[in-house]
Image (cartoon, rainbow, N blue to C red):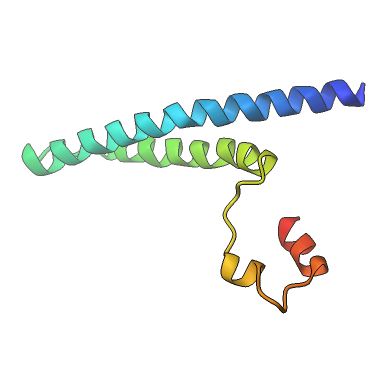
Length: 95
């Protein structure tokens, strides 16, 4: 049973990572549209800006599981790979 739950969570992580790749495109297009409307036609939309923020939050949350699963999350390698960073400290950072 635990293996089935793990498989389901990993499948959801893969799906969310692939979905957020398309969500980035949607956010970029929305931001470009918003900027063009605001600066070319002087007609900005507060609702559209709110939608951009909500989509960005969704993007961040859904892509976190994918990047963590593939061990691709961002670290500051200057500190992570330094001499004073032993395995114990690296484990805390990875946690």
